Image (cartoon, rainbow, N blue to C red; front, side, top):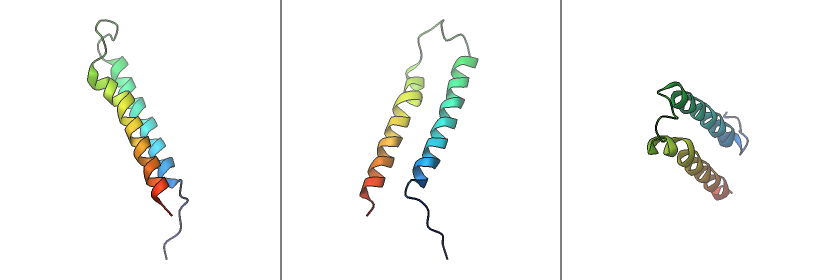
Length: 67
């Protein structure tokens, strides 16, 4: 028989994924060529800001749609 998970379990997994993802991308951004030499590329802005916001919005909508 399957065990029942908390309704917030997907949030915990999602937050862990986002934190890991942000740490890796942030490290790559600062470990690469000097970030002060050129403005941040748009792809880094999408990866660091927009992607986590979209993910959290989708998680919220999924949680609200459950009975």
